Amino acid sequence: MATSTGNVLVGVPVGGGVYMTPAPVDAAEYPTDTIGTALTTPYVAAGFISEDGVTESNESDTEKIKAWGGDTVRVVQSDHTVTYSFTFLESKNEDVLKAVYGEDNVTAAGDVTTVNVNSSILEHRSWVFEMKDGDHRIRIFVPDGQITNRGEVNYTHAGVISYEVTIEAFPDADGNKAIKVIDSSVTP
Image (cartoon, rainbow, N blue to C red; front, side, top):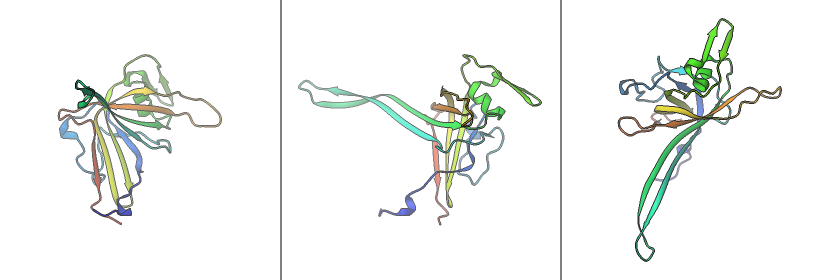
């Protein structure tokens, strides 16, 4: 295939770009196309995400098996990890706070939201990242992801309060940690 600038895409968010569920969804509820079909309940928008967008990391640890004499005769994979990192920007968004601190640690009553900060293990959720570039559409679906790392939260007069997170993607029944659909059926 010849090179083409039409194959070079950027990831402009659709809406806020990040959607989540309170718990992993069943296979029957997987989004199976790109943005052509809007997400419905139980998916909720995660609000604004920082300008750094979403970063996917796909890492493998391997071990070389050597024969007598030092030649590598086999390489085995000992670990595989897929993570997604981004920063939530909405401090007053109850769904964001529940994702960052845990469902049971956030209560809202009228204009008052209370957040208990403790060592609770965070829930597994399904996650969707939606992007576009012109008429091209990209949807990344993580069937089972859990926030496993939370960055520092800074309270300063010179910047917004934000929540940097890393989501670890776990395999579904088919062994998929994420499903990425790129729809270029309508091109500019």
